[in-house]
Image (tube, rainbow over the protein chains, first blue to last red):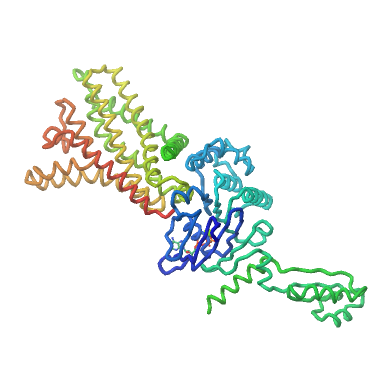
Length: 303
Length: 278
Ligand SMILES: Nc1ncnc2c1ncn2[C@@H]1O[C@H](COP(=O)(O)OP(=O)(O)OP(=O)(O)O)[C@@H](O)[C@H]1O
Ligand SMILES: [Mg+2]
């Protein structure tokens, strides 16, 4: 993809005997939000650090805004929020933001409104040492948003945030993505990023195991759908005889089917008329999908 | 232009942090108190010597400065790189367009500003008090001014060395231990070892040729020799300081030594930070 702001091709990074990143290819286009998922030690942070030019690839290549990682042009295009960062406790939020604005060559006046964007304007002139964890995380995001970067690299930006803060966090991301910023963030939870991310890449043991939209990933995982049918009083046996599946407690039958069989199954249900009182469809859980790709990993590693 | 603004931001932030965590206040107090104590306690000037109080105190203070200034300089700088690695801010800073050389130089300037302020104010207050109490003559004022200026230069050397040591480990604890070790070796053990060698040598070749060069090569000794050599005084000076009036080099070579140390320290710190993977 030539219009991608970040393109990673066949990237491999080794630390001695440890292969932290193993032949990963990935591209992120402007306005696109991509989530990088993976177990602890999957290689997410290592990938970020290589995109920033801190680590030299053992193999493969990276292109950031048409330049090599770590070059002047690349640094101007990229903003980063590390996994763990402790801002100087004695500085105020506004001072931290001013500092990074000046490092990035952005006027502090243009940067300070970001404190409002992330919702900590009221604490702007308080020492960072008095901030809650969520507030520090918000300050980190504000810092990353300085100067409307073309590529945002956020390493586990929502760890430790409450659900409300998380939602607000993704709203801010959405706004900057709409303005053209490409976002690559890492996370441990699929359910958290549902509907908030355009594309997902799942890494395991350094390698990219799956990539696509959440719907695509779910479909490709081919995990069964569970349809729970509640029969009218005394009709459970009849329903079970017609549909098959599994009898559970007095009145219910549970069917499992693949995604492409769902419509057919519902059609047969409709034929049962008054015998069916209620239907409940459970799509595969997002954590199931995530686990599916992790499980595929373990097989892959064993082979 | 951008580079200068980035460096100004880094240096100003270092200075602000030192103000906030009371470092500026603490180090200024330390310098003031030690200088005053030296002037008025123990072997203070007496009787006929009173007019020379500034000169005499400058001489004794130059000896104390050799211990005090390097210690304060190392304490202000040992954390500057390793601490940022540990707290994760270095990764953040190095992801911005700031260059590593700019970062090192700007941090150095910030730390040195703190130290310069502390030395100038501390020794300034002490000098003023001595001048008011004992009176002052031009020679005394010159000696005092020279002491303050070269103390800042000595401080610069050790701020640079502190930053060099700070770029080696990834933990501040290790950096602190290394800073204390460097202080012990350069300021205390080095002189002891040289004195020991001189005693063993008993006026032989070592004492006459190598020894003066080795003394001058040490930044603390170079500072002290420079100050003592330029102070016109018949006060007895002992030990290594005896060299001050018999040094087989021009006095200005001491300044060259300090400048070389400063340059080497900064260059070393820069080279080491270039290897850091934050
Ligand atoms: N500097 C290093 N030296 C040696 N091994 C390293 C280094 N950095 C990372 N690794 C190894 O590389 C692998 C990937 O680590 P990385 O930090 O990228 O994982 P991660 O996906 O970010 O994990 P987490 O979710 O826990 O943050 C791990 O096995 C780790 O031990
Ligand atoms: Mg990580």
